Length: 231
Image 1 (cartoon, rainbow, N blue to C red):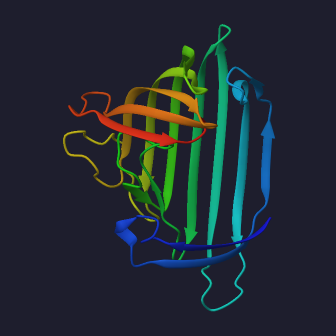
Image 2: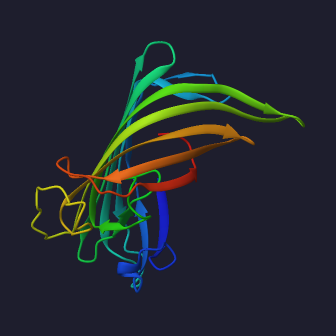
């Protein structure tokens, strides 16, 4: 792949680096594999068993003085383990690494990454995440007059973990304390539960999460709703 990216950290809601503006032209080799099987319980394909991975690196092309010169590497691995005919365990491991004099910064937190933290709250030039979800059926369909339907209700329990640090940092291999959150250079974790369903052709998620260090937990539940496909 040949590509171009223009990163405005202020527009991306990453306040720690809101004065940065980056431009990068790159060539991107990709390695991927996929053995995932799908089922059609909601009218849309839903991953049920197997695994998939993708590994790609963005190699910079110095096409002008205003172009940045840093390497970005991304890795994404997912696996699905069926538990009976309609329940499953879903796993995802994802990471991003930026290397160079002025590396790219990645923001994670919130729906689709580590739940229980504000959107893009955790920022670094190296990030890694791992999520595990137990997914199970709740209701197949709720119908209302006027051909209005909510369908494919699925419950889930989840655990999310993440590592966030910067190039040159000494990494602290300890989980963030939920009572003094958001210290840099540590591991982060959360757990929670939620439900997702389909309405007007898109997948809706309602989720509740708490921060934890696996010794204690934050007393506050963090609620979030989002529209996205399940990983």
